[in-house]
Image (cartoon, rainbow, N blue to C red):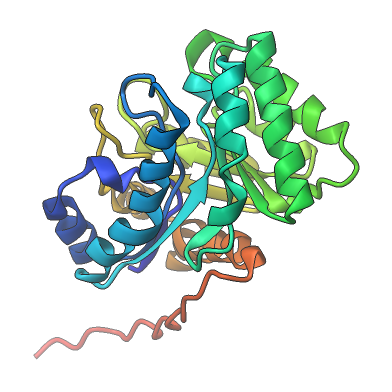
Length: 280
């Protein structure tokens, strides 16, 4: 089955991972700007990184028949440095016109500090000014509910932000309803240990349905699985869910959200009806 990985940090993956993703049906990846594993020391480092996302990575993905799209921002782990944030934000607009840039992301909160919140607001205002989609990171573990609440409240305080143009990612059982009820798109991250397993993700779909919900691997330089989306599809299939429902979550929903950017292009193949097997 074809699928889109809505959140994958491919600059940290090998070409072997692209190969495995292509073999399992990946037709497009959406790569948010990310933390490098250490705090960068200047805005120049971010500019080089943005060039990697917009110039080098699309060519690497293309070799495996995968379309590569990206998002630009200063990520939440470095957002506490307000001086750095201002310098990076000033460089972002010139990258937004690039053909594979879908919007601003992944922005949000990490430790829910005052400085992180101010940097988040600056990113949201920049997205509104340039009419960009927004992809949001929510904190992990014990800070997730508070961080998600702060995120939702901040977005709701800005009338120029349309909820259907925002995806709030890394949702879990205790935050999905809050996000959906506010009208935003919701991302479920299929990531070992610190996020959601395929089994838990299937549970969430069974509890809340598939409307405005996407799944993604969020594969990066840490312990992660670049083929987590087809693993989720297998779990859904094992439970007896229809191919139409699985396709909606792993392909049609992400395509619907991403097409709002005006840049996302992907011709979805219509599935052929299953034919009854003949026995000789």
